[in-house]
Image (cartoon, rainbow, N blue to C red):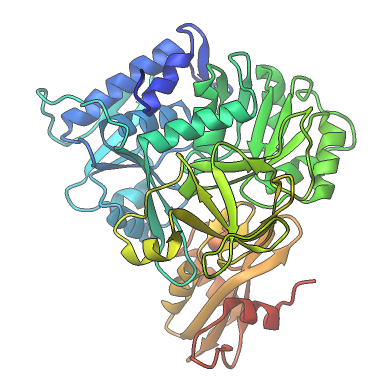
Length: 500
């Protein structure tokens, strides 16, 4: 019986079948992908890296990023990061994961390089015209070292998730978690070798890594990977490569609808389905997508701690229920009250999960683990209810994270950036309603010196990735607090920018 590790998923593709295509760029067959993953894994091992060593990847969506993810997970632990981070952000994340190596494209990633921990191996990675990976590093090499094959319980991937009142939590995902998740997603949608996934989600997120990429590999299909999402080139790429499905956050779906004039776009002819996840999809958006693109839209529910997918609306002839995230897929879903009692159908409570794709616990965070697990169930922090047929509806988030088009932003990060300004005495960030993104970042500050809103936004822009920068900063006399002195972000948000 094959071990449940990521690289086994690549065995599903026939050697000469195309595994990865970059529009206008490189393509790799399954045999070439397997060969290059093994080659890079050995090269990383010779740099002194091994089991448990976290290898930070700061790469754009590309064939290189896929090869490096699989190779890093083979030799040690992959830790992909957003290339848009500023130096201070990179410093926090690289130190928090205790990165032993940093991989960047040649001549790029200056902010990450400056933030790299002392002693971390610096590696430049690129794909040459023959489809062979080229790795350059000043770090010493040991030709006697070799990449030991990972075991099912080895941590393949670490990603951060964010709470609202504490530092971001580190999520360790094991080989067996990711293996199960990829196969689970492929089973849900009946993926097959002739399927072509157009990957428009970033590969430093669990959504892009698992739904678009690894699930496709587990079925022997093809992943088309543009460097980034562009509504101008989306349909030409879908048409050129015969895309049969794509998965995205609602913001991307809305951007495609905004450019559509009512006709079915060239490139949508082969779509079997459209998948939506990582943020709530309105029933009206779902209706418009199905009407204009001519394919069923399947809303799903995923999170990092579950290696992505937990529930999904089924493919036809199964029933799609707008406004729900469908039924459980491969794992168990329940609804629990604050005391830990499971709730009957129709009763609101906290969504809880169990299953093979769910983490065993956060890394080095016993306090978070104590709060997040009850009798073996992981508490998602989302509020919802199950109907009599097992369809899950999400009605709100218990956590106060800002959800900007599927990008989950910890308000504390914005607080901390604004508090670095010498004129800011207090800062509280929160989500403000936005017609396209769902939520936009806003903040309230109490000043202890002279500063304008424009100045504070510019100050934040120098310290945060663009998507985290507040679009509105309210300058207030005081921040509302509870009787015990705690700040409630929702109260601040409602006082300054009430939702409709």
